[in-house]
Amino acid sequence: MNTFKTFLFMFALMLLFIWVGGAIGGKTGMTIALVLALLMNLGTYWFSDRIVLAMYRAREVTEAEAPGLYSMVRQLSQKAGLPMPRVYIIDADQPNAFATGRNPKHAAVAVTTGIMRILTEEELAGVIAHELAHIKHRDILISTIAATIAGAISYLANMAQWALLFGGFSRDDEEGGNPIAAFIIMIIAPIAAVIVQMAISRSREFAADAGGARIAGNPRWLASALRKLEMAAKAVPLNANPATSHLFIVNPLSGRSLMKLFSTHPPIEERIARLEAMSL
Image (cartoon, rainbow, N blue to C red):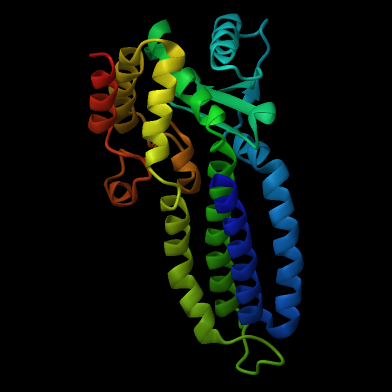
């Protein structure tokens, strides 16, 4: 099902780019947009994980550089029956984490310096196990591609805005696109970006919580970690791109009231309740 969603999103992105290209540059614009869309689809499949990691300036670490973290990821990966993923650290005060990659053999786990400061070893193990569950369930590719697509859609809105301001549109279909179409793009593109994110089912977080609890061996470890992470996310800002917010274990933008309306994460209280019910 996730594979089908992946290719559906990629096809939708191509159609959207072609439509915008036609609105901006007529038939010539459509041709250019088609080439760009094909290149972007290829790039998002092979390099989407690198793009997201680069956005947060994540640095890959070795066992010598972070022995405790590296050893924890390795032990939990073995318990989960997964290949050892690459390990990254993000220099950020907000405690958070995410997994990315196109499959278990090409996966990465990234944690912030903030999360390693405030969580106990058991709580951190619960978080790492949650991210490994995402890898095991093979939903990291669709999540990462959705992040890059949402960013691309936002870029399209900006492109249409500048084209409209500087006369990049024409009413002649042979010479250029329609300025009315440009105005529509400016309005619906940001909404479309949110819809792309919301299409990533919130149920994947519940599944990763349950899977992570089984990998770690104790659901209360993750439940305790989620309590701390939710409080910290509200108090400690993270300069996160909204297009990537669904990747993190807790919404990095939860401190912004408007973002609660479009949250890609289920309520923390419900996640904790389900985890605690597992330990009964």
